[in-house]
Length: 188
View 1 (cartoon, rainbow, N blue to C red):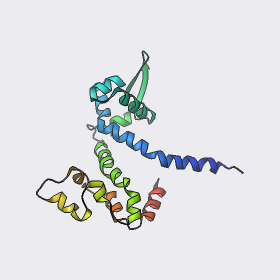
View 2: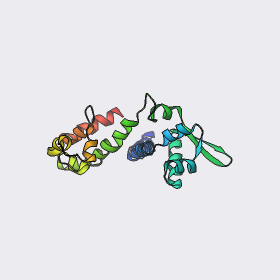
View 3: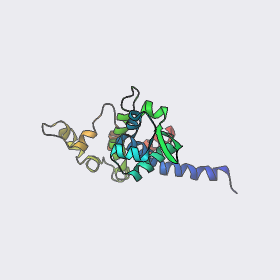
View 4: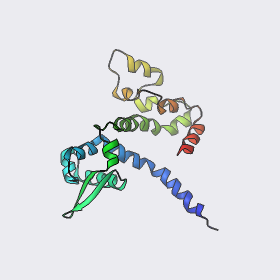
């Protein structure tokens, strides 16, 4: 008694389970400056050229660029038995710092703040309290003081402050995570 749902449901679960791999690939490629470097090059580049230009390992560059091409963030073409990479229109528009429509800073915020907060979701649900101290090295009680004192706040604490409402704040209250998770899943 097999149905199409038997195939669909495990696929959805696997997609949810592995979704962070896509996010981390996007985060790393932006943080390393892949899209800006390719834009500035004005020609397709090999993984070796990107690695040399960005000061990263060639093997790491090869794997990251290949993953980005698989996600359609880069195009890959073979020339003289060598894979050459270039930005897609989408990457040039949204992932380069110089674009007026750049999402670069939002991506960095998600990578360095939101992602870190969600790392402690299990603890927040289990304990029923925020996890700022684990995430930023500062208790929530001392967060304001740490950010606005005359002494220099920690870099991790500075990362938690951004305009608008942060999901970290929602996570920090940990009052009804079941409702939060349910609402998020409905929006996906």
